[in-house]
Each structure stands twice: as C-alpha cells, then as structure tokens.
Length: 214
Ligand code: ADP
Ligand code: ZN
Image (cartoon, rainbow, N blue to C red; front, top):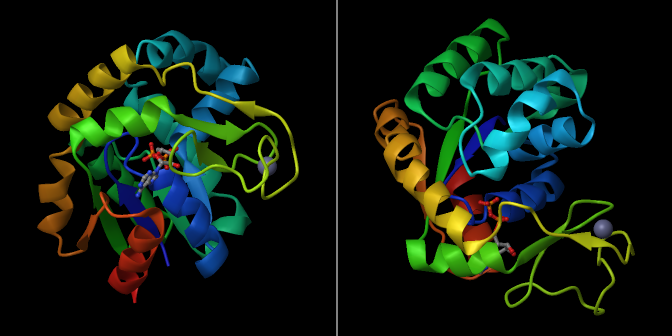
C-alpha cells in the first residue's frame, strides 16, 4: 500500500507514519528528514536547502523531487511507503503523479489530518525526537515512559528542530494554507482523499487512519 499523509506542520504526520511503519510494515519517506540529513551531511542538495529551511520556506521543487525520486528507486519501498512532507504544492503533486506512474508505484490513498492552527503552534513548539532512532515525543502530549530515555532504543539524547519556534511556525502555517491546502481539492477530485480528525488523541487518530485504509 502506497499512501500520502497530508496536513500542516504539527498535524501528526510523523507520529502516525511511525505507527503505520509498525502496523502495516510500510516505509516512511519524510522529505523533511531526508532534507535535514542532506544538510547535516553537507551534500550539494543540503547546501542549497539549509538557509531556506531555517527561514521556514519551501526548498525548490527540483531538489525535493530529485531526492524523493532517488529514494523511490531503492528496493525496500516495494512493500509499500508513506510519503510525509511531499507534495507541498500542486506543481509537485503533478510531477509526483508522473513520477509514480513511470515507476509503476500507484497511490492507494491520501490521508488528510485536519487540525486547528492554534493547536499546531502548541504541538510544534513542544515536540522533540530521539537523536538516535527518530522516535517523536512531546513535552506535554507524549513523554517517554522513563524520563530522559527513549522508549524505542534506550538512547538518552534528544533533539529539537531549529525551525520549531513560534515565529517560524506562523510562517510555515501561512505557506501551508496558501500552497499545500489546495491539494485537498486536487486529490479529492481523484477520489482517493480520506479525511481524518487530527484534533483527537494520538491513539484515536491512529484508529481513524486504520479504518480509512481498511
Ligand atoms: P508533523 O509530522 O505533521 O509535523 P508530528 O508528528 O511531529 O507532526 O507531531 C507534532 C507534535 O504533536 C509531536 O510532538 C507529537 O507528539 C504531537 N502530536 C501528534 N499528534 C498528536 C495528537 N493527536 N494530539 C496531541 N499531540 C499530538
Ligand atoms: Zn530512540
């Protein structure tokens, strides 16, 4: 099963993608993670992306689509994947459609996580991840069972994203509403859009997604 998780920053895409990896054995392809890795490794794409990302802007369609295209050529995604962070605008969606058709990887569903803007600011400013395995946590909504120790891998190191501050969040939300939200209509008209109430508890959202994909 190949799906897209659609929703504003902080909607819970990463959180739900991690759960789908376990329950459905899908592979999460997060463009944010792939780009941050490129920046950390100082690759050619990474150098181009760094400043734009820190200012909360969108990295050029060409860079993101090239990174995703290369990733989709690896064999491990054959059992199904979750795209998280792409497409961000209608032009990317159109290119992605062509790319997926050429690679013979049809989309089964696009799951939209619907969340109020006010809730997003709180979610984003409180989130952090395990530095070793990438498991996501939140100061208020999802703490590890043992304080300071990752539930999944036991690491005691965590990190916060440079762009997860209140000012940047507002510009990221503006960009989302202007450029990404039109994708709801785009995939709706293709008949593959599933809407999920992302304001519900994390477990509840997981079961709604399970029903939507059943
Ligand atoms: P995205 O990948 O869409 O940007 P995340 O999955 O990183 O969003 O979620 C943002 C933060 O909000 C995380 O810290 C996560 O633990 C928390 N979170 C995710 N889903 C919910 C939810 N349904 N209720 C409360 N907090 C949530
Ligand atoms: Zn971990």
